[in-house]
Image 1 (cartoon, rainbow, N blue to C red):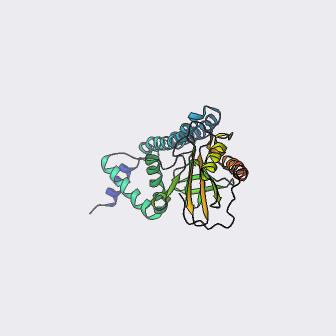
Image 2 (cartoon, helix red, strand yellow; image 1 turned 30 degrees about the vertical axis):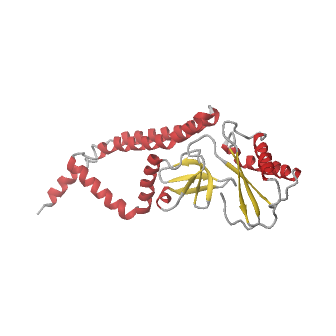
Length: 273
């Protein structure tokens, strides 16, 4: 049976004595890491907003990765200062930490693990427009535990990474510089479909928000109450998506009225394309 002296010796072997721990060095590491993270979080978004548009998403995506690397580097630097690292001691520390974390921070750790998975699989990145549950908005920040969404109503929504285990994530642009916008039109069945389709395409092609490098498509589907048109196009800047849809809708309604087609008023859509 181990004696108290053996236990004490084991503790001394596991953790350096209080006098040997360089607390000033730990303080400098923590302060330097905090300053580096603050610099990254301030500089990268600043450069992203003022630099070339093609680099914006890459700079924003680099923020969480750089922050994670800085924190891991700080931990790796501090651990040898506090602990006497050997293989046996490493197993003891890892086992004790796993038990404590597993019982006390199960949900938090689940979000942290999901955050690491999200960094690898990249279901969302800073600058992406995503829908998680009923929330849709731009990913403004990807933290270790959660992401911050900025909704079109200018609300900040915090969504934990653990939602990737249970919820579907819809990514509108998936890292691309633009996304598809859809303007819907509902018409009574008696009209010239080819004419309306051509008019709606011209409406998109004359929009000041249009990205001319992407295709414009008009698709339609017959319903019992009439015809459902979808005008699909891409804005030059995805942050203009709502102004783009509004522009397409307003001018599309005018074009339809000039063509003599009648909009349906009492709608009960049963399907979409």
